Length: 183
Image (cartoon, rainbow, N blue to C red):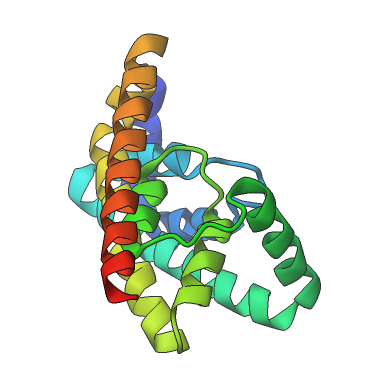
């Protein structure tokens, strides 16, 4: 715990550089193979709940924008995500609610969910609005409860995952029922 206090003191002394580096960490996180939950938990530990959640929201929002740019500028990246989408959820149309729930689940591919959002929206502005809404929950939940989730015993984590899976399924059924009544 003494090391954490030293790091917190260093961040407090760094002024604007600490938060800027933390946001940059969100942007390079995929290159370092760090899960979103880990970075958000670190934000809560280092900056506190409010500032950590705000910084994670900013970092995840910027990462959503970077995803958009990468997918449209690099056709190879788009093709890889399309193949991944076909493997993970073949012939499946997700609702916005399901994507929001998946954003909360640890270790769900961030760029794949961004790709789903891109396919569901018509403009970059619409995509960014939904992306911003979609990263609020993980930024807040992981920052506030990430430490608790991370510290849960394996069965606690399994129960949480099953609950999120049930919510995902219920939202999907509601979405499919709604689509059936429209057609």
